[in-house]
Image (cartoon, rainbow, N blue to C red; front, side):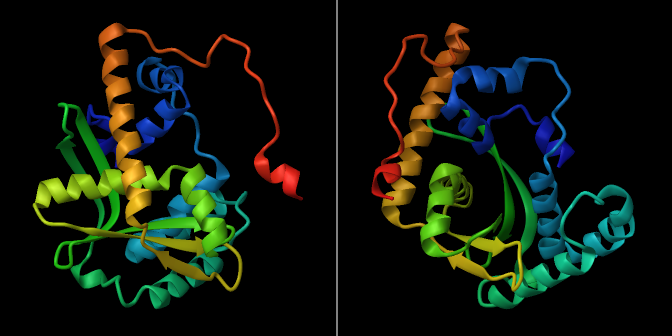
Length: 239
């Protein structure tokens, strides 16, 4: 992972910051500050990923240090093991550990010449299939679709698919596995439809163009200095 992070290339996480504002991405890329410590939620997500994708690593590295490193997490070792087991049962039709490569780092060039990178949770080269595991509080379709939109997972999915389609030369499919963090640790498998992926692709293209403009001009603006009107979210008027 450290080697992947050292690659001088833009990834989907960078585009997510850029979508917020160029100033946010500039701060991440060019301001020489220590990386912020991961949040509790981020650490928990990483540990669950390890238990699902690399159970041997979880058993030999994470579990022995649990009381020392993870006393602030709400889940115990047995909880994490139960989550991983539930996910393995749910995904048995698409997730075959013997034919799946986990934590796959790739480098590629997008149209327009931008050097890019991605790190896939799991890739099955025999079936041209990408799996991405997401922890969530609610894996129902309505709730998780909001998460997919708000967290930009649809842009990430388009990014991964375009990268692998280009590198391998064959069309891929990608599945999100949404994993709940509370008992019974239910999980659901989703494949984004064409309109969602097309929206992700068009936004990725626009963001890459904005990134190139910022690099060339040296101007990385933040939010607009012009006062703007504000209302409440639409749902607030229908409660």
